[in-house]
Amino acid sequence: LDFMIYSDYVLSSERKFVLFTPEMLADTLNVYGLYADDVTNASDHVPLVSDFRVIEPDMTSLYDIQHTTDPGPENTYPSLLAGQSVFTPGVVTAVGYGGQDNNFFISSPEGGFWEGIYVYYADESPAVGDMIELHGEVYEYYGMTEIKNASGSILSSGNPMPEPIVVNTGDLINSADAEAYEGCLVKVENVIVTQDPNANNEWYVDDGSGACQVDDGMFSYPAVVGDQFNFIIGMIDYSWSQYGINPRDIDDLQTYSVDDPVQDFTQYDSYPNPFSDQTVLCYTTKKFLNDPQLSIYNTLGQKITTVPGNEDKAGNIHTYSFTWNGTDHSGTQVPNGMYFFSINNSNSSDYGRLILLK
Image (cartoon, rainbow, N blue to C red; front, top):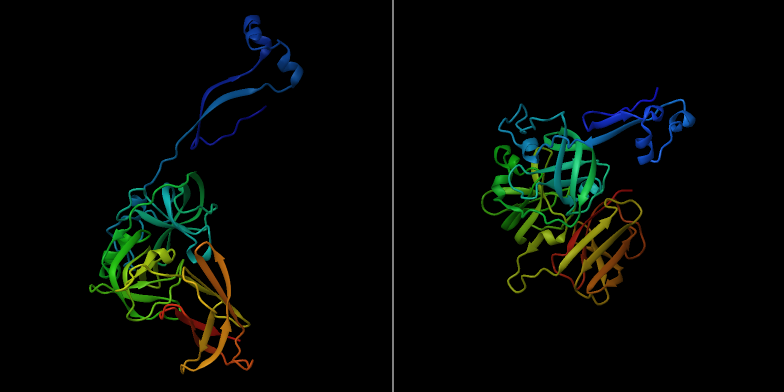
């Protein structure tokens, strides 16, 4: 016997028949170009024929996945669908969380409260603006709702994203207020940095309503206490019992300047950091630097060496790279610890920290 095996959860067998040509009328055989002995000559098995209709799986909205008024035992407002498999669509609002292209955030096209979620370890690596349909498990990772191990299909690309939700920094502190923004794209305005980045590159900003965290899930910025921003945009995560804004790139931050409201600084990054043998710092800007130099200082504020830079220009964007091998100006290896750097001819706030661990 021959069989058609299918799942009636995703397919519906519609018109179906067994093709047996010896019993078909001559006129019918002629219409379809068949002969009476076609089936018996071809095989000792008769063909089974069926039309299948694809069943649209039951879709679960992001709102239904995220929304809850139950704080739960840990006061983290876990999803009511935790542990269940869901089909859900969404537009990709951010990619590369934690350094992995298949970790991303999605939102409903219209956006709003409870309308975003984090997707962990999907089989797709989409781009921002892709409309994607996902099937995965709703999971609570230490209080953060996510869809994990998701399989997906990209339906379209280049879609507009929802506008970020404008919130107060004080709304992103307590679970009762902040949970509605988890996984969503938000925007805080007119904020000042109240705490320098800690060892995990977490820093804090305040608009007068209370200080909230800014994290580096996708982009790291060398904030300094007293820095002011017209706005900061980012995705909201929940990690180590705190909600944090995760900017996606430098365009999600606009610093405040009395003379020039347009920010010239574009991006800097160092890798690896901490480092053991050498680290490479790349500084990208629209500004040309004459004889680029990276100055390294110890924690006493003493300059220990200067590193020359190499320039790579693409259009009006300049990228300067500096390689430091952990030695001072005499070539002597410096001790393990924290060091500071600054870049000449750039903005005074363009400095950061490097950690040497042999």
